[in-house]
Image 1: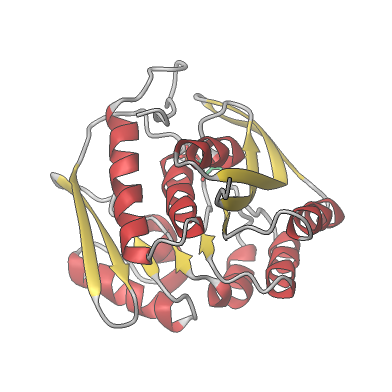
Image 2 (image 1 turned 90 degrees about the vertical axis):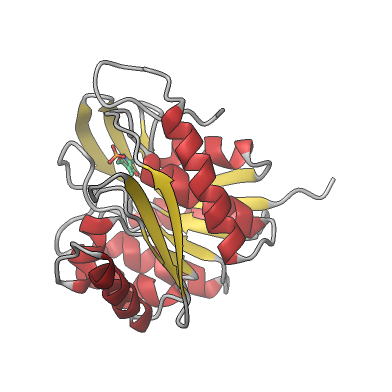
Length: 260
Ligand code: PLP
């Protein structure tokens, strides 16, 4: 059986809703064999992040080496990277293996406010990782942090996408979930055209791990060899269904439903 394979380089969420756990569940649901390299362990549940424990650079490097030399992924994603030194290591390894189908989810802050990326590491992300990205998937606050201006309308969302494209990412997806209005519109820019993916906004507090799940779904589809437009389109419906059918787990911001 010829199965598609994907790798996630990200943090662990003990609560199972975000991070590595969300990525592997999403890969599985989309019929892709998932592998992982952990960057950090978080003690976390639906109420928030209680602890963050980054792994050593050597531990991150060795996991990527082990996977890369034996189970070559058709596509990979990065999630929580935490520090400049981890970003540099991950960027070096991606170049060493000449992996091209890289989805960068520029995870910065958890919904509860905990830092998943150190403030000074943003510069390093821009310099080292964005130029390697086949696709980058910032939400509105992350895109604002990357481009340095605020995004409050469609025109600014387009300008931000162009600006991130100029930093070297081949495709830029700026997600509209953190905006307001009836619709959540995500924009895909490929250097020439803007494509829009719209879904009705669901009013719920159970959106923990949506960014991880969405970028994992794009990665899974790319691993199967699907073109970027189709991959984003599938990911958008996948995340919409996952939010709509949330499971009501935990007393806080619960996870989405990967079985949906
Ligand atoms: N914890 C980890 C390990 C993550 O990678 C992420 C993803 O961005 C989060 C937490 C954030 O989850 P939330 O969707 O609640 O912001």
